[in-house]
Length: 174
Image (cartoon, rainbow, N blue to C red; front, side, top):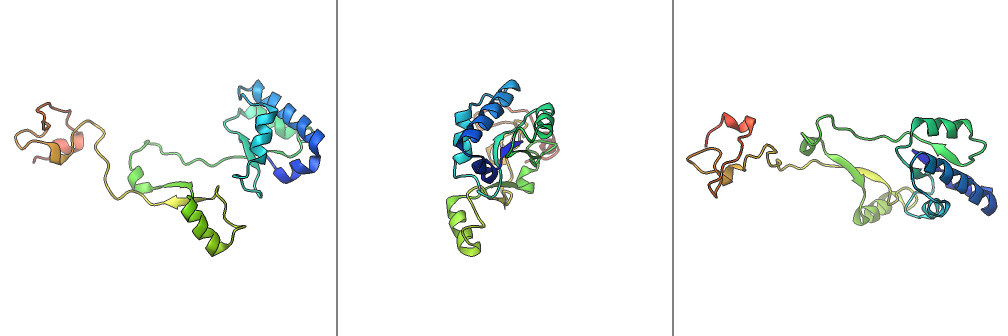
């Protein structure tokens, strides 16, 4: 991920900052990220990002651009290349209702957290863990839920059409 350190960026001054954003936009456009210097400037000045962490301006950039920006750090002051942690589920949504997820905190949680830990420690970009759903999800293989099945055949629905039986339910009868 390519990000810009706000405090270092503001120390550059308006003229050098504009030149930097123009060059950064050119490099990002070269690798397929369609951005302008104005859009980068708006993103850097957006208050939804923490003032203590660099503002992300491009994600999923190729390694060659990351290396280029790191090697030419003197030409791109205040631009940092960061590694972003991404939670990956090897089996997709399987067991997602058990594992849980992370998300940005909402307005009510933000107010509560700021009361507890102070306004400078919690921002709208703070993430927190969310509990998993306790309710099991509907089978993905096409079998209707147990309440919708007829007593005569395990795969018949209320309308009489049949759905493909789920392998985990094929052995059970109702």
